[in-house]
Length: 234
Image (cartoon, rainbow, N blue to C red; front, side, top):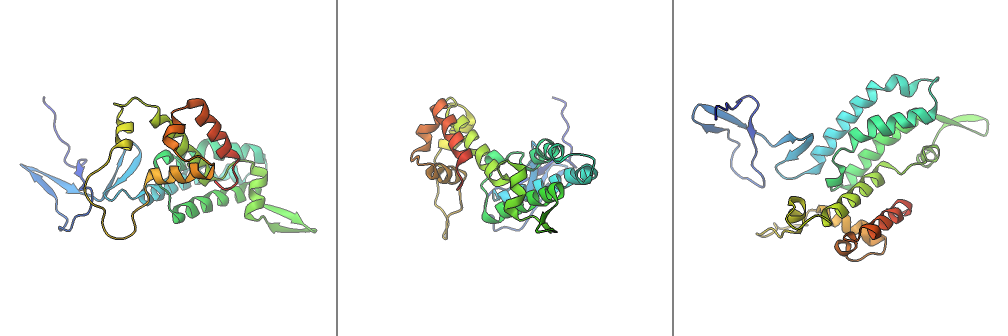
């Protein structure tokens, strides 16, 4: 076909546990480097399916976006409402790109919240309390923001995506992967948290048992999402 492989840009990855030493792949005159993770369609893919790698990459890119807008965020001329709009439209989408597929650990949630509160503090600053200026508490930061926090934003995105996948045709790839039952045995120790486990946990807080049945009803799932937005414990 006349296609030529770019050896410098082509790498390969072994998925799963591997006790062998790291080796490059040699095919003819080509040598391809073996990597532990790589970027595909803007998201980081790791050999152990570790979402922390993706969250770390998102935090780095969101920080770059923030520092590019730092002069605007610190400006005394621009209103807080406009600064909030800058965060929601230019920084938060960078931070949460692909969040629909994330399985967040407690550490990941903590780091995302820390990043968001850092920006909100830059936007809203201090507050006068009994005639003295002081730093706002975490709860006070979200009062003028009047939006759901970053962790809840990610959870709602995951629920929307879950409903979309369950309403797909049976032969669609995403639905087939979700409903498939992989073979083999789990290793010893505590099982890793799966993406579906996070969906089940969030839906259970809203009083729904079988989320796969509820998701097939588009109107009913939209109602569930509205309940999730208003739920304080989600």
